[in-house]
Image (cartoon, rainbow, N blue to C red; front, side, top):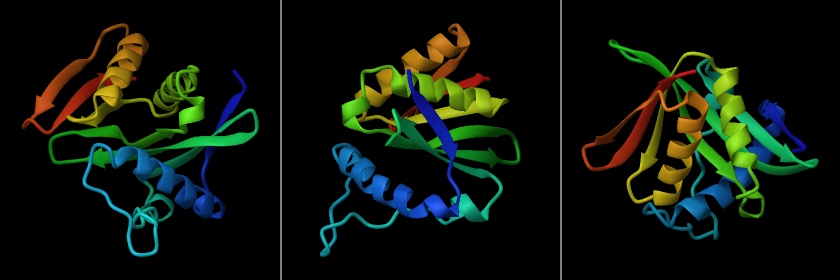
Length: 158
């Protein structure tokens, strides 16, 4: 499979901002998101991804064309620290090709350590995707839990 994962720099901010519109459009099926008067969805807070050390933005290219992105966060609380997929997007034309599965596993390999991956409860396709990918990646060594009826979480170590 001919793809690459690019660590997005500030020079990529316009590309990521534009791809985010497609992501929010897709995700609006599961959340209360509406276009504003200008016909666009509101801006996603991407500035943290270039201003803070614990945010990792990636663009995905497939056969030389932009195909999606991944936003990873390093989260540290008083009791634990872990990586988390903040947002994960593969454009529809590239889905069901194995691209998303390959990208997800590569991201896990890039960030070794504890992981928690969350999905909105209504987003059953995402739950199915992440459970399958994480099960394959970890050989079934992960914990899955339901949080307050709002989301599904998988925890594992990469």
